Length: 293
Ligand SMILES: Nc1nc2c(ncn2[C@@H]2O[C@H](COP(=O)(O)OP(=O)(O)OP(=O)(O)O)[C@@H](O)[C@H]2O)c(=O)[nH]1
Ligand SMILES: [Mg+2]
Image (tube, rainbow, N blue to C red; front, side, top):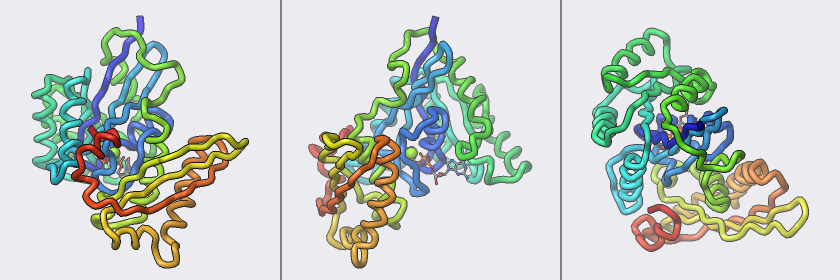
């Protein structure tokens, strides 16, 4: 008999949820950056080991909504928690526990979910610092097992994966044998381009950017042509993304192309256009079409 189910990843922005999903899946299914609120959609990544299938649900970080986009992100988190079999509460070892973490812990308890805690980024703190945080983490959710890990180095990740697999109920597999995610290809490619943008821009700009892949033309041998739009919300933001003499957009294009070539396993010609789309973050119909629901 096989076992399987959904594990929702809950935590504050930037604690390393997406990095961990990638580490457990063994492939890049979610983009990562040091800017908070990188993840906007629920992304399912599949960890298959022997007779178990753990579907990891990467989620936006818990945050107070400021606009329609972030309202939807918060709603998505709630919705995914309702459908999950278990929750993984993630903390970062280099941050003190705060009211945000207690709020998340009580939300998970309210949803009736079995909680496991991962204390991530152990590579960034000393042993005594870690020991103290592990004690406080275990007090956060009394029955939860606590795993110190580094999603970046891989330390502790395997043991955590085995623990999650053992928690899953008996169930048939939901994904094909070699599937790693349920994301449509256009969305994954758009995300990889957005990652290249947000890693190079600052302040409010990362939050104001969205990317839409309009076309993936694979009619040529050994060359995929990808056409994408980068949306920003103002002319000045457009200027920043393009940069002096087009230097910024060129750097973004080069970085994104490498990622796309890895993903598609072929040469890529990437055609990027920057477009101003005022208040796309507040446009309900548009967010629907982007799959941010
Ligand atoms: N040193 C260290 N850095 C890490 C580790 N895990 C993640 N990071 C870094 O932490 C930052 C945030 O990682 P993400 O995986 O994007 O975090 P997230 O929780 O998904 O963030 P949101 O999607 O914004 O909620 C990135 O710069 C990662 O490289 C780790 O184990 N050690
Ligand atoms: Mg993320």
